[in-house]
Amino acid sequence: MSENDKAFTGSIPEFYDTYLVPLIFEDFAADMARRVASLAPDDLLEIAAGSGVVTRAVAAQLGENARYVVSDLNQPMLDHAKSVQGPDDRIIWQQADALDLPFENGQFDVVICQFGVMFFPDRIAAYREMRRVLKPNGVVIFTVWDQIENNEFADVVTIAAAEIFPDDPPRFLARTPHG
Image (cartoon, rainbow, N blue to C red):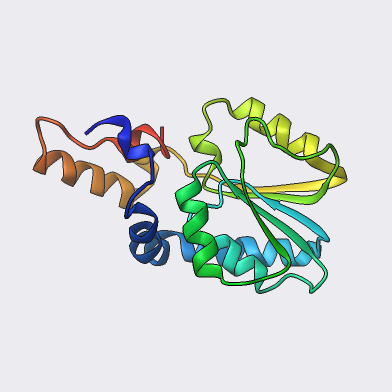
């Protein structure tokens, strides 16, 4: 398998949202939404929003005057998230690179990222950008996975796929989110 498995284009956003979100991401999104709601932010930034599972969970719990900027590097994923979310005047959809966020210093009360930081090629730069866009005393909330050996589901899937494709085993899970 090539490194093109990182592109998330074509039917991947819909596939991701239909199959992977309920299986893996939905419960984590609900937890993230509870954490965000407890902070009652006026200005919120989501980085690496993907197919919008966190966006949907968080938007349902935000105040009516909140401003929620939802971003992702991948425009097809962002487009899918927007189409599933539906109209919401509190949400601003913006393509953005987490390593070079197009926002002013001190703009957000909270920055969130669910299972995205492990995809950033320079995590230190991304963390620096998150801090830069936070207001004083702002909060960053993010979730990550441990090594693949510590995630039974991903490890079993990777081992099974390697048995089916021994000459060219898919290593995306081991290489990227658990790498």
